[in-house]
Length: 417
Image (tube, rainbow, N blue to C red; front, side, top):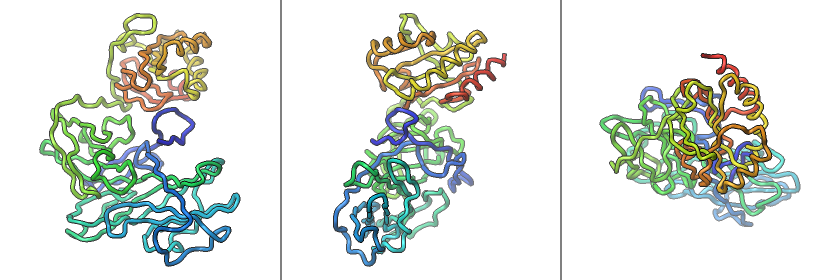
């Protein structure tokens, strides 16, 4: 996995809002002014550049420098499911052409300009018409904007719009263009006599969700007609992961490549994931702190509490720590407490950092399991720094507060009795 964000440390990171259904499963998208991605994570794939295209092109634009290099990506199951891209670079000038409509003509799919030009890379997004063949019927599925897609014929070839993000590093990886899926397949699962909204994601970006080992799933487990994205969501399930609705646990059993048909099966019971959205009470735990004393969330009831996940090796965590210390020093005598959970794999590393930070006087937990730390797993922590700010009743108020926003939120809470 490749991580582009420098504002947090974790296996996979991006940003998103909420997917919400209207009239059942003709979903519209509510994303808190973010309009880019279908999930808070991605799995980049490599498009290897070559001097000649694998397909015969009928037309090409005038490239900078007079020539281009080519890559081919395969999406869907149709007879022609190969898409050619051309990348042309001359010094600081770089252009990308993607045969989004799959007509082997690179002159009618855009002007070659990148949408994002940063110090280290170029990035752009294309909506490709991905072909599928085989039996239907296709009832509903998601295009990149979650609008209703008309029914397709019961069999035969059909195409589905599918967004792909491409990016190219300016000073490294010159032989590859990286890309990842920015679309999902909306569908429905029949669970316990009810129809539940679901979204399937092909993590290997091949336009297919029939490979269940590479297909992630969002399920409306709480039945509110909404999907709450993100790896920490109570409605996100990785490839093969069981999910519980009511008293029954299921697994994804099968799916057509384009999610035109999807089936689940009952499996051994596992507890439902806790809902960690603001307004919910943070589930409790029993642990032992680094002083050898038992500790639980109940110890802090009646206090405003920040449960702070960090590690001594985490550069963003250390950059944020002065703000956390300042909030603690300012509001501790007003009923504000902090409980640190270190993801260090060696207690000595944590102790060494704490010795350099006399202001970190709050209790710490460190089970030396790193990303597999018991409390981190319980709260589905996938990046750090991550924190849960709780009110005096133990309800989640904010997640991931930093800087001045942290102090402002704590100040408001300590005033409440």
